[in-house]
Amino acid sequence: MKKYKVGVVGCGGIAEGKHLPAHQRGTKTEVVAFCDIIEERAVRLSKLFGTKDAKVYTDYKELLKDESIDIVLVLTPNNMHCEITVAALDAGKHVLCEKPMATSYAEAKEMLAARDRSGKVLSIGYQNRYRSDALYLKQLADKNYFGDIYYAEALAVRRRGVPTWGVFIDKEKQGGGPLIDIGTHALDLTLFVMNNYEPAYCVGRTFHKLNKQRNTGNAGGDWDVDKFTAEDSAFGFVVMKNGAVIYLKSSWALNIADPTEAVTTVCGDKAGADMLDGLRINTVLEGKQVMIKPDLRGGAILFYEGGGTNPEDLELAAFLRAVSGEGKLYVTADQAAVVTRILEGIYESDKTGKPFYFE
Image (cartoon, rainbow, N blue to C red; front, top):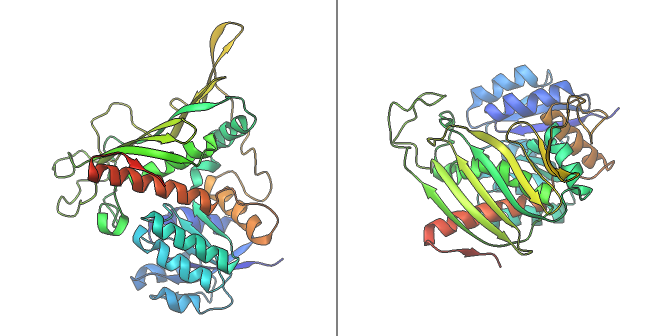
């Protein structure tokens, strides 16, 4: 059986905690190259997850010269996603890039253009779509169980969950704070369930209210106030071309009692659903208001072969099926580009104090 040879660019926490364990559990890939600007990190992960003869690089361009590599994982800070992805596609590699797709819509379009001219597969790491609750919710939506979904909430709200490692709080390297980091997951999930990728306009506000405080009670320890240049919370209201609306809430630090992350609420003219206490279906049965809580212990619904049950395993299985031509992508780059476009619109609305209209 052919094993796809994989090269990793970016050997930080998302590589070690999500992607590489999935490859290690799988049987269709072998990771043969590791690249990081900090060589020690690449060496360490190569010993944990690589083949015996895995190569280590500090320059991704050198890694891309290896013609034996089939797939490149782009797991770097956000501001490098576009540059590395475009170069990898142009080098003839399939690419799985971490979320968000890019820090701007212009960059996202560059990545789409590179995909189209290369003919290679490009997907983005929105693994929350592969959770059992999300899979079931999407299945119901696709069968029109909710009818016309006209209102939705995309929720990624932490009380004190600022990531103090890496460069997460660096606006220049990441393109923003919780909106682009975790809000992107909630928005992606919401658009996917709605199957609506045509925004008309949005308004947004970002806040820097808590990021200069000390003695914070943060789960990961106090942050460096001098390095925390991204927003600590951000909120957006998006109006779609068909009139539907999405309220997007995101925060790393917010004085709120009930945090919740990477979940969605959808309301249609037939029924609704939320993920606020597990997946709950809200409807009317025989003239009475009813809340249904599906039993999702049976595991994955859409991916039943060669993928396990972890979201990251299902993500990898779906990506490899697309690479082999045996199936379609579950997360397309075109969808991810719309997520980036909306996030950019919210940031732009905050800058101008006016609604941002999408062309």
